[in-house]
Amino acid sequence: MLAFEPDEEDAGFMDPFELRHVVIHGHDMRYRRAGSGEVVLLLHGLAGNSRTWRAVLPALADTHDVIAPDMLGHGESAKPMGDYSLGAFASGLRDLLAVLDVPSATIVGHSFGGGVAMQLAYQHPELCDRLVLVGSGGLGRDVSWLLRLVTLPGFEYLMPLVFPRQVAELGNGVGRFLSSIGLGSARLGEMWQSYASLAGTEDRKAFLRTIRGVIEPGGQTVNALDRLYLASHLPTLIVWGERDEIIPVHHAHVAHDAIPGSRLDILPAVGHFPHIESPERFLEVLDDFLRTTSPGPTRPARLHDLIRAS
Image (cartoon, rainbow, N blue to C red; front, top):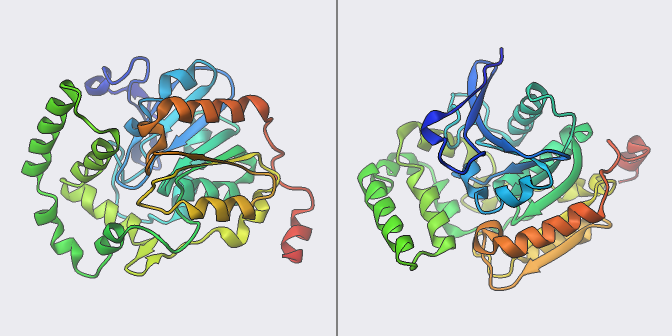
């Protein structure tokens, strides 16, 4: 069953990127879409949503059909009980593209969204034209201590104290004031938005189910490096901030080495959010990649032989 309509409350976000929705398997999924041409699918990170792409959406939509969903459990999408594994997210995005009548897309994934993007390319290669990994998870054990702390047993009982709604609302007001006088920081602002998004009970539950599927107190538990050779048929771009304190930049070099023919671009003086901290440079790199590559084949030749030889 499919339903569609703009979200009137968020229609002023960035016209024409109003928040829309579809109902998939009985669950409401929100997304933004504008432009025309080849499809680019933008996947946000943990505790994020489609708004994280706000600085790059208009320029991308000048040349491409851009879709930015709030993945289930995030943003304004539903937060049901159930499976929050990478495989489930990949299947959910497959279904979203199906109901939107999109046969394939360039998949751009940031942080956790990068892990989902790699899973989608592995699980449903026919959907993936190109792969773009931005400060991606799933490429090594290392991750910030703060994210590891959240996965400790019993932390869910502390979350109402750590993420109180009153503090989130106060912080949002302070952030708007600082931005209005030119003192806002793009990086800190995005980190605050992620923090503030966990003020609601259902948001915290969905966040915990998601993060505990990929991170434990010792670090990341999901690693795609052993299967990245299967992406050799896909044009692949890896973008990372030189000063990323969430996922270290050496993961970018490891991924670049693991994907034959991939491109690597390290942005100087940029942290974990290149598309927010340096949107002009990010767009320059992404635009060049999109212009100078063609969609890859739906799957590598002799996939069976590649797997057997690994």
